[in-house]
Image 1 (cartoon, rainbow, N blue to C red):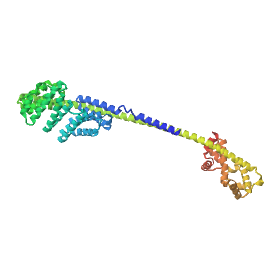
Image 2 (spheres, rainbow, N blue to C red; image 1 turned 180 degrees about the horizontal axis):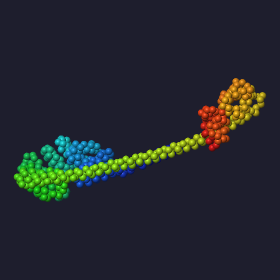
Image 3 (cartoon, rainbow, N blue to C red; image 1 turned 180 degrees about the vertical axis):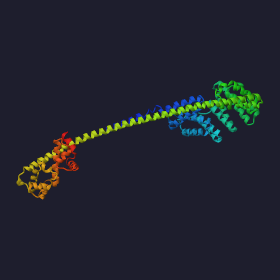
Image 4 (cartoon, one colour; image 1 turned 90 degrees about the horizontal axis):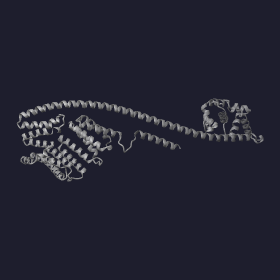
Length: 530
């Protein structure tokens, strides 16, 4: 029974703890839910060009998921990628490399992590390495990115447009590093994949991308010392294939390198006219660098001084606008960051208090359970002890009844059949029927010898021969039995009964009583009256 109750108690404790800290394994944890919300918040800030706030939230999600990425590998990789991207854009290449390296190391050989996502992370890592002028490492990383993308789509030669784009991105990176031979190989790989895509792909996209793909060949020819061939190929590209911002910008870059500045200036003006909505309404330094500065350079090299000066004025105004916008944006973002930080501190404090209260409540419940358990154990032990003492009392009563009968039998024996020691012992027993004899604290063998009118040695011999006891034990036996009778028949305190029986030391009485009855005086009284 005890073991069963102890098992139930342990089960209650485990259920209590599970209720406080457990969760359904099929449901996302609260931490994961909060991470997903913060990731969405980061996306909103990212799309609103509030990059500091976006970086803050992406970083929070990345660090949160870093503790337990198994909950959502995709979110871990995506938040880390976006966080690294913004670090890179801010110029913190080392920080970006550290984040990307940590993620790539953890997902190495992990089949649960999407291969496409790993390819994206590797591409961003290669970009950072290229910016750090670690060209050999960048080449190897780009190759790994392409391999990961192949693993995702199955194989080359299927006309996968993503493989075309990735091959062209690697071509452009190697082209910028002036690794023209390697760049040519990747451009050929993009051509082969695009040729398959042309057979089943979107016709509008095919038309536009043909022009972009041809422009890459034009740039490569120009850079490798074939300007005539480059010019001829450029001339054969239909203008209809250069109607998108990327194609027009790439064409303008080629014209600048080829020294055809007037054409480049006209193309930049055309881009500015047709694709104003392509650029964000915010004037940023990126817009100045990528849009206005190339147009100014084309005008200046083309000898259009007046237009170049006007463009220079536009650049100055744009820089002023960018500075103002950046200051306002930074101030607004810093304010939001401060408010967000304050809210997080308040939330952490409230969560800390809630956790503390929960711990206190759990501790209190556990204490109540333990106290209840111990009280129950005490109750059970007392019941067992009471039952044991009751049985023991019955045995003692039977034993003492048998001893009294034996003593009565001896008293009825003929004097002629008794030895002198037995006759003296009979006299002593008759004498001890008076409590006043043994209740005297000073009572001893001399007292008994004096009362019966003999020598104390005869008294000792008679008691030892008939009972095997010493005179002191003989007297204490009568005292203990008298105490037992008083405990049974009266409600006097134990201390008073001790004095009435002739004991002067409470501990001596307790020891002798327990030796004789195997229980304490209080337990004996309960057993006798229970």
